[in-house]
Length: 232
Image 1 (cartoon, helix red, strand yellow):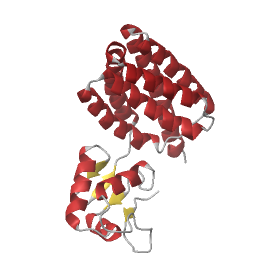
Image 2 (cartoon, one colour):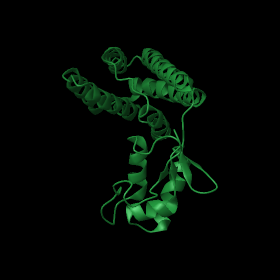
Image 3 (cartoon, helix red, strand yellow):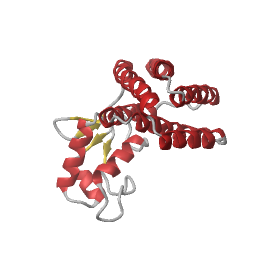
């Protein structure tokens, strides 16, 4: 499949924004993470300026910021949507596992009554969900809630950056099988029990095991897709 140059023709795609005042960073980031801009697509500043109906300065700033976040890589002319590799995914997860395991331990130690109430309410709401896509979205909310209960803003901020890198991978890798979701929900429930029981060690260990399993599933899917695409 050839490399696409985004925004080359006015009729090639619908504008990302219909009116001035939209945030180019948010618009472009959303298009990358929802798969509208695929890996290896080239984004040109001049073309995006026309599509978004904004000046070049906010487009330039948005593209530079997205490159800093790891979603784009700079080319001699323009930017390209990054393609994740198994090695890069392992690196990202190594950092995430270290940080999120620690913040789960901190949540067990530091959570407030309000944090506990939020976790219990979220677990109750998730238990009533049946749609797989809805469960995946709720899973993201669950992780954010655990991090908030750890009350360490620096770790939470770093994890948000890693989340973005993982989202870039996830949008192109479908691991929505109901069996995997079912296992994830059981692991989440066990982590919450440890956190609410103020069992720091168990919370850390369970979070590490949970994220390690998710990492292994995603790497396996990525390797399988690479193998399939390499076949004649």
